[in-house]
Amino acid sequence: MNYIQSILLGIIEGITEFFPISSTGHMIFAAYMMGIIENKITNLFLISVQFGAVLSVVFLYRKKLFFQKFDFYIKICVASFPVGIFGFFLNKITNLFLNQPLIVALSLLIGGLIILKAEIFYEKNFLNKKNNITYLKAFIVGLFQCIALVPGVSRSATTIVACMLQNINRIKAIEFSFFLSVPVIIIATCKKLFDYYFQLNYLTFKDMELLLLGNIVSFITGMISIKYFIKYLKNFKFFGYYRIILGTFFLIIHYFIKPIIKF
Image 1 (cartoon, one colour):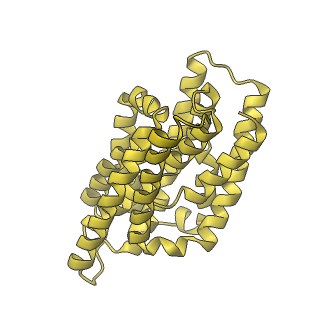
Image 2 (image 1 turned 90 degrees about the horizontal axis):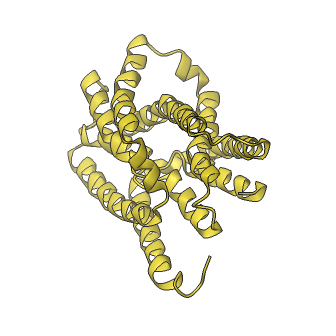
């Protein structure tokens, strides 16, 4: 991996992190096209670069994030608990999927179809009243989030869909998904760094520069994405169609174009 690739992946992460289209899936596609998907530092980068994007949430929503009622933080912990447990035991499987772009393509396709079905259900069944996120609903959101351990599924998609299926207002669902990303991504990044060090894959000075550069870029692009593009998150069907198109496009590349052209 070089500095240009770090910047490009950082831009992709910052733009896609908060949309239900899988930022990790997009970065895996990009790394695959760049020919660096098998590099050890790439595997670490794909997880840790999300830290910069989540810091943009902390910075832009700092007043809302740090001045909530105490039960809000309990609900965030309840929703984070399942993915913490599953992530710990399924870490090796998740790492294996990071090197399997085909899994990402299929996840995008299937996830796109589910999003479209969830949107139809929401439009037919949502009652225009205030539905609070209870502890039980937060836990169910956390269980759905575990599915996002498979790259290409999207943490944002699973949490928002879980809220919608429980008849929770879309705006509340989006906000809860935002705030839930903070502990989950921070813990995942720390765990990934620990595993990398524990496996005696010591970071070189260049590796640290690449990680820092990627996080800075994802932080900046993450703020831009939240400030100017997040309003489009309400159009959930668009992202469902986008996922289906992207997944199909990659399958075509993998099966028909890659055998002819080596990336």
